[in-house]
Image 1 (tube, rainbow, N blue to C red):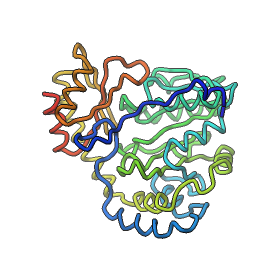
Image 2: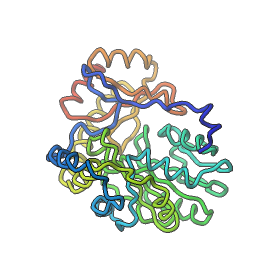
Image 3: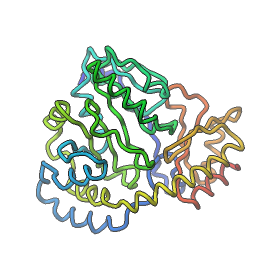
Image 4: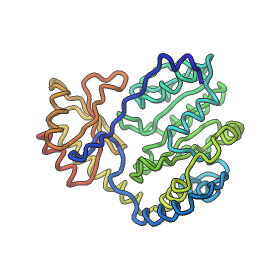
Length: 335
């Protein structure tokens, strides 16, 4: 980490609210979690008087089965952010340039900078066509946050091949891929994939996730990860959730159906981006974004102000939640 970069860096704003009087549409987490989580957590808490096993064998096996890779390829992390910090600390230094999609998750550029590297912004829908030559790292968010689209798998694999030829690492953030029927790119040589248990399982405070990698980068990640980096509750609940296939499928069906319904209604008033994710980005046009945010708040709804994302100046983002909650959203926005 570049200590000098820390002197000029600042925290990145995110969605999420602790206000109990509003429904939080600003954070893209599932409002539901798998049944049976509580007893698993309670049992894990009781076992937390001992250090967790640092090889995380059960969690690795569950994660590998979930995404279709070898258990050895799984690197357990305390959420995607811990995985990003670990990977970037290994592949980014003061001489590095990194291709970063824009608009996209603001932590990418932030993490590049605090490692001393230089983020090179590329339009989010053009990243798969980029020439990786001269860049140590190329980042793809699939589906992209906040726009919502998932890049084509064929184009992504072609980018992975160009990255291998150029000696670059391709990082694919699949935090929202669980909400789609699309296959992961895990196992592709030279590619590091991040997966989150925060989003689809609705447990953001658990801090559980993992990276998937192969070859030398896998070995370096496993050596460089923090010992006991995941708590016993995170490991046990995470492994349990990863085996709840029916829950994931029900979530996908609900999100797809509700996303179409909400998009149709929002489109009667504003321009809405196509999305494969559990959220929708929309341009409020001639309306004042602050007025729309305030109107939603008065209706008990917290939306995400998307103007904090690079290149967006008139946009808001809404999560897709349960049908009755989505009804409240549409009523508050008068669409």
